[in-house]
Image 1 (cartoon, one colour):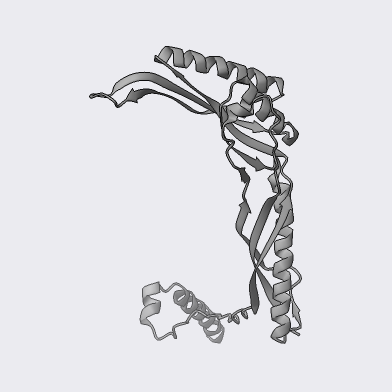
Image 2: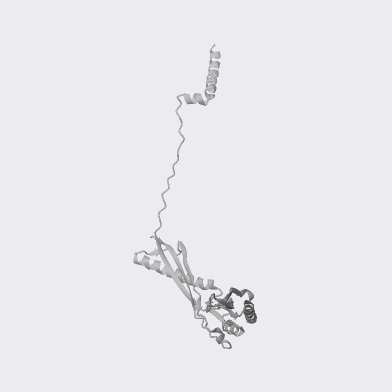
Length: 260
């Protein structure tokens, strides 16, 4: 009998263990087993320290001699009727085009900027009567070689141009001049930042700015006054003084204060 008892007890214990392991989730939830809470891990990060900054504006400018010009010229003709006025204008314009081409001005640098025809009235009677027509053809000519400008004006007038409205001087590659102005603006900003730092008892600021914003870019071509009585200047050499252009730049720059 003792041997049988020894053998039965382990079997009963095994069955009990299996029954316990096979409990449903509902049975486990209704039991007195302690509820296990999920573990929570909290990682705290310190807020980054704000940087101490100095923000300044800098300006720079350079002067450059113009190497190109844009001139507005053309022909105004009158006639008793629209056909005669137009024919006279066409003849003069053809001569001007041929002259400009002979001087090496490319076709793409000759643009018609204004073309008009309108009747001329006499107001001596009522109603006013048409006594003729006026035709005007105006070109905008880009002269990329400044040394040719005087010849362009003189020979265009010789060919029949009786309307020269004005000249604007410029630079073929203004970006190179602007870069020089930009460098000067950055140097100006750096000098201001260092002066502010020194006056505030700050020993060092960052050698490289944290941010740079181009706030303005100025390139103002020089305008030359209109040439009056252009027809009277035929067969003369028209003098031209191009002067100098000013190219300017402005920047807003921020530097970091370096702490010991």
